[in-house]
Length: 460
View 1 (cartoon, rainbow, N blue to C red):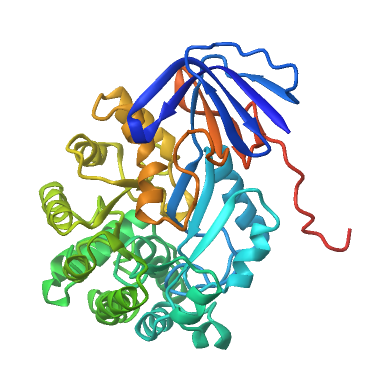
View 2 (cartoon, rainbow, N blue to C red; view 1 turned 90 degrees about the vertical axis):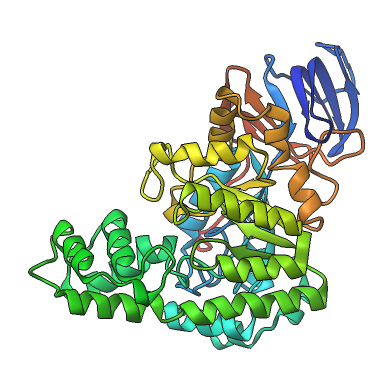
């Protein structure tokens, strides 16, 4: 099958180039020809000819840090698995946002639980593993409702032998007082206790009053706890002492084990010579820096622009990570959408990180299922002139392949002989995805998914 893409501006991330007014040919899933400066290539042997209308042709996005798109326990806390409906909702969102490869960081899933979804959706899915004794223990304390004995019995070695490509995510908001603890675990615990659900903002303020930004019980401020309860409308439903006890039992209980779990996972990453993706936030930064010192570029410091960091602290931690050669991940957050974890006011710190060249790779994480598209952040950063388009695209393509080579082999840039995992963007709006190709097959056409839907209703 031959596809010709005409009238396009081709972004070559590893060379920091944009080939303007060019065309490209795909033969049987592989890029076979690039014609720089040839706006229209007439090829009468082509099965499909696409006019990109001067849009940008980029490598398909490779998202190395996300959750919620496979079967198996959810998050590094081993929660109840998502339904097919939610899994395919999330996968379709990723696809429409230009993503062609995802790394599953719900690391307690089995290979079979990942491969079932791989067979039902065009996005290429690889998985990491977090089956270490301490991380299983931390998950059981934080949640663990989705962990079966099969999941608990698996080991990192077995998972790597069967196809996992990295260790991760190790540590998590749910086990280290971060995102999932704020938007899921504490609100759920309070609702179970008194029948009222609080917002993520209210939950975050209460956790901070009890544990501070660094998730340390010595920082408890009872007056701030009372203020947080009053603001959340809980002052007549929950005493300060009860709130402190609840936060300690549901949020702080797994924290020390999770910190040690990072150290344990670093030992295994060294032993098996694989990448380790860790939760980097104020609660885990010391353990992360220890691991970075030992692992260098095999350590991927997840969401290093985490909102628990203050701006100067964030920059300093990144500089220390860079000193050890670790890979620094920048989280796209939810600045433009839900704004439950980030606000538009806090985007300045992330733009500063990109401007100073401190970030290596970009990812969505999960953000309560409300992540902003990676291309929306890139669009903003390019508009603000803090980074060039090729450098920004490299952070979600070429740089990811360098950091985790087994995630998307033969992908990550646009060159003859490379796999044709490609995305076409609107020339006037970088976050608008027009086409997505996976293995040369157009699976998004004019912003619409054009692949057969999986037959989830087996009785039909």
